[in-house]
Amino acid sequence: VPYGILQVLPVGDAMFAYGHLTSTDQGNTWSVIPGNTNSIRALNPGLDFLDIMQGYTTIDGRRVMHTAYTVHAIDQTPAGTLDRTDLDLSGLDGNTILNLHEWQGQVFAVTQTGVYTRSVSDFFTKQQ
Image 1 (tube, rainbow, N blue to C red):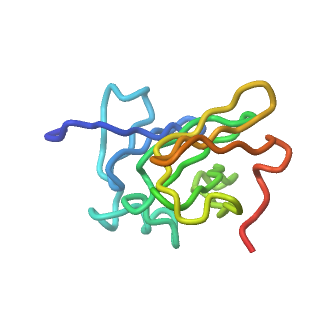
Image 2 (spheres, rainbow, N blue to C red):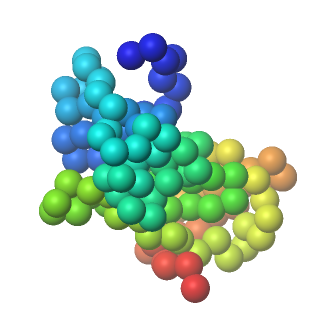
């Protein structure tokens, strides 16, 4: 792979990087996702990987990705594609999200202006 891979999202048995690369052997080999070399929309319509891959973590056993201003729960469908659920960010209102962490039943959103918290049970509320 002629790239320096900085962010990788593992989902199920696959790993995704740069929006158009995938690996099924823990990153030992990579291949271009067929159909579109700029994003994984060809594999996952409506999910533009490059727009959301700023960071990821696991919260309550689910993969969570974020941009500076959005948070998404990412699940693998039975067909092997990715499914995104946009999550409610009430209380963060315009803060730049740098990272997310789970600890003792709480999710902490680290931002440029402070650390915000929400219970894990409320975290996966869908965006309205």
